[in-house]
Image (cartoon, rainbow, N blue to C red; front, side):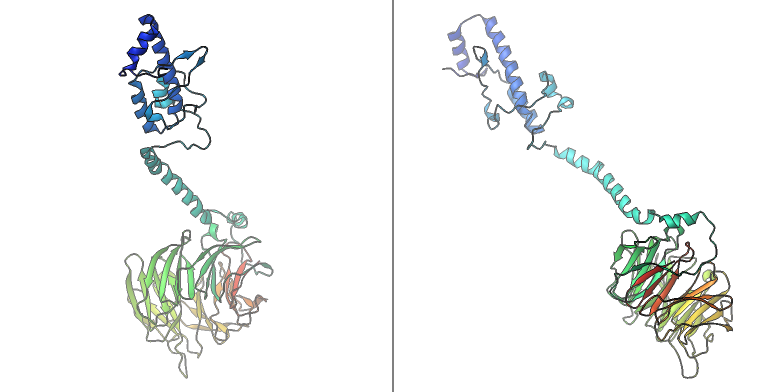
Length: 483
């Protein structure tokens, strides 16, 4: 029996033609039909090949003549050439093109791929897709994910943004109680940007600080930051609300991105004993900040050039720093107390010249763990270990007002902080007894006392937008929001 497939350069082709006989026209007609049938069946199988193999094998097959003998009405099975012998000739795909030109046209090769077969994509197309599509999609995804924290606005805050802020109120009822810190929470602070003021920053002795959404009934932690290897003693927002400034007992101060949690600037305080107790931004130049701690000097850093400016005080440690109006002068509090008076307890500095303006501001034998500047008037207050808050003028010679003394809370050696409301009418202070106290700034009268915590309450932060809303934190690591 002769072969069913013959090639033009084969010797069997002439033998078959002599045995069969017939006219040359009949042979050419059957040859053309068999060529079309072979190409049709071959195109069905070739669709299973990769694109590069498809083009190569098509050229290989087109250079040969294929014949298909007929046995009655049924066509004999087609035997494929040797290069495609590994693929079964019975593998066909639906919706095939109607002519051979569609097979060779790449624009019309849209076939249905059977299950289990993954279409081949050339390497150049894969690389082009990665360069053109994936980076854009990735950037859009990152922007959506990163901007979610700073784009979502609390409905309670949004309803108050359109209205002119009224007089500050006194919080009286617990809104929520938040935990999560494993150590004492040194400070809590609302974001200063009005539409982001639902974000609450907390810094703890457990080496972490957090951002919490705390103006809804179910507050939750949005992000936990672990940028320090020591206790985070102080933290504050930048005016834009996109970065934090934190100081730690690991002798470092860090500026951190709110969204990504990455360190934007890292400042290592070369003095091994310089454990940061306080860090404050310059009011008119946020790129500059001051750090004080277990050192005899106060350091000013410029985050743009990393230049350092030293203020030599000759003291053991700096407890707190506050800039006065305009940032020309600033006040530092220290633990330097003599037997008869508190010499150098409060020191006024000239920011530009690094010179001491005055160190004879407070003469009582108590240290001052925290300071606060009045938002409107030319005055500032100092929390003292004498269990009262003293008021001073913010203009030279920084005299103390002896007739204004805010009493009723306890300090007892804890770093209890005090803070003014946005309109300056209410002064709030924590207490070593766990209570939060609210005073009328003008008549020095205690307005209300919140039984907030069972452990010492270290900080009371009043909300800048929502009236009668405040956050408190305590020595046990608990944070509460009141309204």
